[in-house]
Length: 317
Image (cartoon, rainbow, N blue to C red):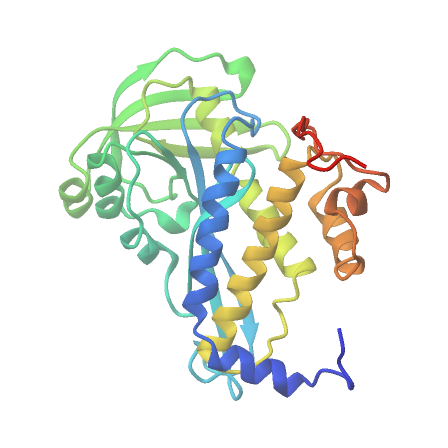
């Protein structure tokens, strides 16, 4: 590329601290909209027409003396990457980067509920006041119940215990504040997990789907864990070029953009290779002068939708 000497780390650090992170965030949102359209018809293991999101966060540890703006523990700093993942294609539709002290449940205040969508969350997001906001907006949620849940059973639906479903109940909350925060009825499903031999209790405001489907939706939440693992392992966001908040957010949003770009390439070219394999191929052929399809397939590539041109020659020889 014409570089006469190695690129210095300080040069990249200065670039990350000087350029506003919102540039990369806006670019990522454009890519996310494209990717979600491409993966809209994909299956994630549960046959549903509704949009299903998994909400979770991951913590990226930092050094407190170098990143004092991101407090987490008394002697530790960290940032949290709160992600709402569209399970069709595992594409992040919402992402918020905060310091390590922000509790996960506060992110529900930042979401704009989508009517008809299903939000799958773990027990860290169990806040009845915030969940009732989702309910009133016409959205559905699936989460785990805490062991100290104070509720009374109103109705029990018949269940097939051979499937692992112990009970499927309609309940009302008993607690003074919880009853005020969520005055409507909830659905409580108790499942005996055959793999871990544990009893899991789910809460939801979705009464139309079968109980086994509600349990399968919560199990599909592992896609967001895989997304965090993939980004951390393959996109190098554990070491940052720059120590400011702007530099850290810039690098994380760039990593998310790379992930979505690779997902777009995989879908548009109908490639069977994994995202990791595609990323490795692109990393070693980034500056090669060849068609991207040829680099990824290892053969002469012709797009499937290539138009046949019937333009006549303008000159006769």
